[in-house]
Length: 112
Length: 114
Image (cartoon, rainbow over all chains, first blue to last red; front, side):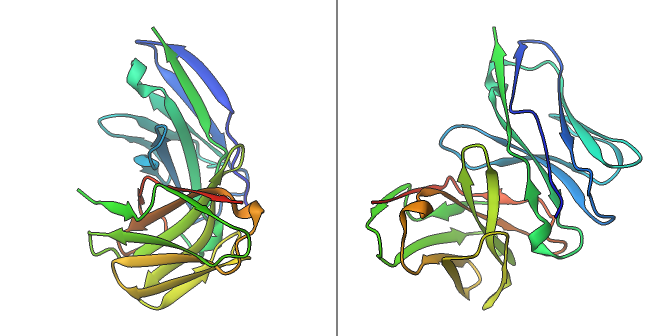
């Protein structure tokens, strides 16, 4: 079964760019890579999704190398309000729900 | 904006009780999910439903069942609650298409089994 691994925690300062990498060596051909943000006492919230290469939206970028065995969420110029837990999710492309695999989550602490 | 509502934020039950967790979404989504979230383990999929009365097992279905009688409502049932089912339970929904479509989550039910 696919395993999704990400760092447990990261620290940053306001205004810096933050990159969080997720490892997914056993990703299947049709799997998506999706990132979610979660604040305390709330459910996860969708940030960005990609399949290959680079995806950018108004809040983040997602970099996926050609072999797709890892992915990097990039948050430009973080602020204190970006302090949260970030989850990487791999799967969902094949229709097999058993392959929706979340990482353990990365707690990002942004300092002033 | 999509709203996924879980009926209780906090719930305390006793070992052996039958427990019902309810989830309602207001966007006419076909897909609905139940997860449990535990420290250090992230989110783990319990069950998934892709239509009324349709369901599929996730990674950890043992000890749980689900019911989807109406499109907007997805219930998680703990047949005989045990202490190892103390956890945060999260419901989510997504639009039709691939299971990997972005999911919209409720704010969770923190369940304690005594």
